[in-house]
Image 1: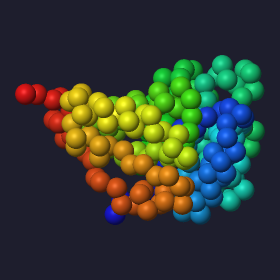
Image 2 (image 1 turned 90 degrees about the horizontal axis):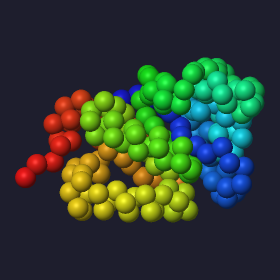
Image 3 (image 1 turned 135 degrees about the vertical axis):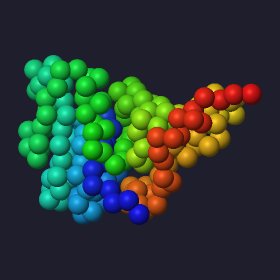
Length: 197
């Protein structure tokens, strides 16, 4: 079993999302802190981002924010993180999320979260990222995306084996079980990335 030391969490900054997502996010923070898993996230102080950071810190965990400088200019950052790294661009931020990261967790989120999630799925398909990818499908939020990925597979844009790239959980208390028991992935998987007749 591969020990999980660090996880990147993708999450929304909106304060207006359903309360059930906030509650689930607080549980995620508590679970990760209790397991002594360092959290890396987008550095924001509002929405699910802020709830995640607050929960990790309240439970004596470690959380690092990575945020582009233009967001600092409008004071979007959380003020009390274990560590905050300021970068120049969104692209650098995404790259930094994966440095030394054993797993990725996508909480409910908007276009930024969707972009981050789809990029890391693509990187794993190409063998450039080999850690766990977990989607928290709270209250069926990600059902349409999962249906789209199934359509990609059914119409041969992806292989059925590519379903093993990600795991889906409906409740945050299942997170550690999936983190510790997912399928191993490695750089040789690029050989299966291109589908041929």
